[in-house]
Structure formats: C-alpha cells, structure tokens
Length: 326
Image (cartoon, rainbow, N blue to C red):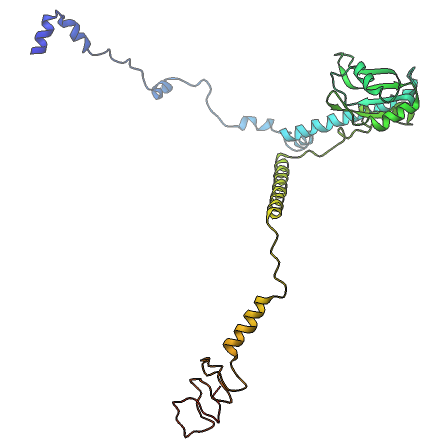
C-alpha cells in the first residue's frame, strides 16, 4: 500500500503500467507438413521398369560396349601418368637438341686453348672483378659473362681468355675453389671446342650431377635419416666427453717396489695366527685349535695326554709323551 501511494504521488498513469503485463499476440497457425503433402497430387504415377527392358544391352552389344570401356583413373595414377609423359617429352626434346648441337659451326674469335671456363659466380660479380682476380695468374685478354636473353640477368658463369696458354693452365690448376664475392668458383677448360663429342649440361650430359635421376626420399625416410644423424652426433659427443674426463683424471698410483705389505699380510700374520709351533715345544700361550704342540705339551683345550700318559691328570692339558688330537 505504501508503494502504491508513492506511485500515486508520482502521477504515474495506471494504463501504462497495465500495458507492461498485457499478453502478446497469438502465434500464426501453420498446418503440419504431412497434411501439406497429402494435399499435393503427383503428376506421374510410379510404375515398374518393364518398359525399359527392350532398351537394355544384351549379347554382342554388351561385349562391344565392354571392350570400349575404360577404367576410372584415380588421382595417384593420373599423377604418375602425367609424370611419365612429361619425362618422355623432355627426353625427346633433349635428344633432338643434342643431335642438332654443333659447336664447330659457331664463329668465335677467341682461342679455345687459351680460354678458361669459370662457373658458380655470384650474380653481383661483374667482368672487372673477374679480370682483377684472374690477372694474378697472367695477362687477361678478354672476359665474357653469359646473360639471360629475356631478363638480361647474369646466369652465373662466363669465360676468361688469357694472352698465353701457360697462364690458362696455371689458372686451371690454382684458381679452382677460389673465393670471389663470398662464393667459391669452379674453373675448367673450354670443353665445347677442345673435347670431341662433348655435350653441355643444358642438353642433359655435361659433368654436373644435380640433373641426373635420383630416387626421391619419402618423408619417413628423411626423418629416419635425420634421426640416425642425430644419434651418431650424440654418440660422438658422448665419446669426446668421456675422453676428456678420462684425460682429466690423475694417473693411477704405482705399487711400491717389492710388495712389502703383501708379504707382511700373507706371510707374517697368517703364520702367526695359524702357524704355531708344529715341530716342537713352546707355544703354550697360543689358543688356536690348529696350533699347539702336536708332539709336545701345548696349551690346546683339546690337547692333553691321550696318547702318552693316560693315568695323569686330564685337567692339566699338558704332558710329555703324547700329542694333542690335532
């Protein structure tokens, strides 16, 4: 009642409060799907396949169709087929180019026996750099770099012509593996005009081995190879560590000359403990059951005069005649 009085004082109309609690409009009625399907009528009634039996292939027609049938090619088979076709086409193209290649037909002003081939060059290396490096072996007449005809970029190899043949031979012996612009270069004689039946690498022959057919390793084989290399490196590191630890150890102490302690231990003390006086008198203070006087009077608790004087006192344990039991 108090809240209603407060709301009345605030001049809040009653219809607006009732509108907050008014029910919503009812949901639109839609008939079920089953009832909608029943109302629709099929245009064509379902029937059997009897009308299509005469059109089926039988006998000789079936055999002719099956002869022309081709199996569906799967994706791996298609990739393998395309690979073989491309390889065959590439081999045919290289064979045609190799048959048509004739270096003697080219007109060149350079002397083949004074020209040195230089490869594996950096793309930033120019003719002046090569000439400056090759002049250490003799006078250089000309330097030629090979460029791509389309992009006009260097292809990484060229030819150096010397003034004298002896300079070319000196460079051939000493310049191989030399670093030029942080790249180790490869030098060789010009084999195109000096070696009979020579074919360059671009025709699939040459001296390079990177374009030869090599079996590709699978992902599992690569992982196994890396694992074996890691195990081998780990074993080598362990062996090196063990060798270093062994080298750091001090050398073993040598035994004293003569082996005095061994003689004292085995010779003296054992003779004192187990020896006794086996041959004659004395030794009364030794209480070893193996010691005592076998022929005389000892202090053995099993001794006594059993074999000598049986009429004497057994408590004395001594005697003159007989020895002890042991």
